[in-house]
Image (cartoon, rainbow, N blue to C red):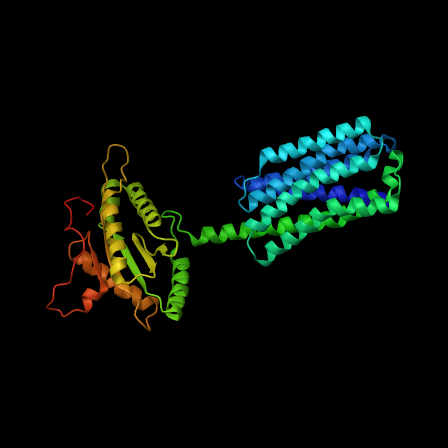
Length: 404
């Protein structure tokens, strides 16, 4: 009775994991890996319940019947694990392995007389699928402790498909089909599944929780309208980058940009036009900067970029490209032809300066660009020249556009 309850508890655990992952997927249907994992656990629970509740005299037929849901379970879990780390599951290869296993099972059932051959086919089919999964995970996963825990669990689960049958059969000798559920193989399967499925399921749940937390952090760190970093996250990253630049002796500059006469955009064309302007301006910045640069929205219509490994002249050229591209942005809605311009201030970090100091100088340069007529780029270095010397201006004079 105790063994029966143990055997029955294992599919119940699998069913709990299935329901959990399907509920998680229902809450965020974009995460299709949770649907695949939920399906995998559901098929695993189904196979184990069939195996436990079917009459003992079914013998080899029972192994053949459960082979299908066991294989689907392996395919579901493999697909879920791969999707989670950004790897596209090799669907055609998986289907070929699954169909090959089914054909091999049908052949041994027809011409063979050993249940061990049937069990080897079931284990090898799932084992090969999990070997491919483990390889993909090892190449694509991150190297944090949670991912390492998942990898170790995945290796152990994969290895048992090949090791468990060999060691079990060493102690079993010949297995009579009607005595399959009393064999050492079956009891080993039950105990390993009882413990292993819990560890494997917990590893998957922990990684799913980590993904959810990471998604929340990313959502909070990103300004929803512009698609750039929100101010708090931007300043955290910039301060860290400035410290790194100071330690390495790397040139860095800040570019502060502001959409000209943004209030007029909202007043004349409405807030939807203003929102489109913010979104288009943010997307343009994201497309123009390098992966080493950091960009964020630091105010209503004000944006800031940390340009890595660039002095003030290089950063001013980037600002000029952004200025020109801004004039080409189309934030039109229907018949309204809405055009915008922007002004930019640029400042290079000097030794001993912190974020606030560099930003203040770049912001002052932006203010001078605004005062000088807008739709232009000014560098902070120009402000340190003698007052009698006219500061250099990059860009055209203001257009006659209402938004300029």
